[in-house]
Length: 521
Image 1 (cartoon, rainbow, N blue to C red):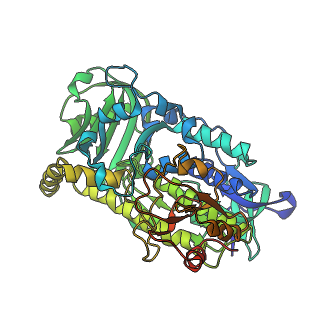
Image 2 (cartoon, rainbow, N blue to C red):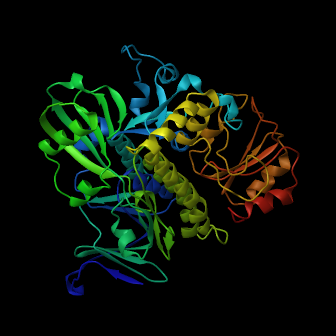
Image 3 (cartoon, rainbow, N blue to C red):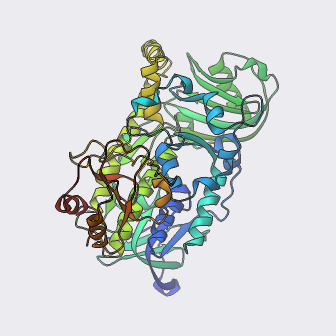
């Protein structure tokens, strides 16, 4: 396959003769995290980013805040990155007094579905049997700019090369590798991954079908001055004409159900236009005296029908886009990176069992489809019509029950994330519980090196010999845990997913059979 976006003469092309294992398009959180995973496994990685400056005013505003869900928090913890996010240490209660994260969490809403909030103190976490009391907090806030900076520092420390100001202008794929162009420069690699966002050049030029649904609204995120802010209610307000959200004075989010018409015009949103939309949605005569920054977005929901085309792969918004309602986009993309990183590294190193890379699409596509439907369902009950209002009232009643709040929290926080690994133990396909050993060590702390783990609660010496058969791909970890959930042995993939588990003394053949899908001896 040959793809070229910009014609050029070969004599003008400045060639980069080094061949990387993987080139990644995009130095956002997904591209950076994927690079970290690959470099942790000793792959050579190059990131090409079209923006010269990683800093953006939008990343520093309240809409630059991102909610991190349980799978993301666990992934960061398992790689030793969670402690570097300073904002998680600075949560305060509503009165400004320093408090623990847990206390602060309990004093605020845990999240929302279509603007309908569920409360922390109405959640019954005991229903999530595979989560132990010492698990990481299931939801945390992070500043996007700080988050990217943490990932960039880690990537560079691991040897990742990041080149900024280089937009992808073309690429050619052969059976042996990929040549990527940026203007007159070209770079070679074995694999090429598009992490270049919703308008992905890699996806558009790489022959990927992008199927889905068209938008129903235009969203606006704005930093502005309001002459009479008291005319707008604080918080999230769903009205008969749309939605407005005033998180704090000077910051406003709007949803106008115009089928995405204004966003598609690609016209700049003027003060007069934003004021007209704000007045119509809020049914007030609120006055905007100054408009500093504004961006628009929609609820268009599309997903690549395949995440791979030969040696080209997609992750993050390049593979799926949807409304930012509920803030699940970043978490979905980081989940792609965590799932893909160790598998692609095994392919690069010729240490992958047959079909390993195919499991990336097989596992992540259904998760993406669920998030897109979750987004569509929210839009469906936010429409400014009587049918939506009737559904909204029913969901509001459900979310205010203890079981309802627990269900919605489990979906929003990613607690229910599960890969269908084909029968076996009920824990298989879920994130491994954060087992704590008798010496105080937790299993997540033993996963910083990105290896698989054979966890042996019965301390059967023969299992250490078995783990050693895999040449360092599987680490043997014996020891008693404070809460073992009735388990005897657990095989954990490098991404923290339980590949296999047993409540009884296992035989070596059962473990080898389970490991065959993920590791080679």
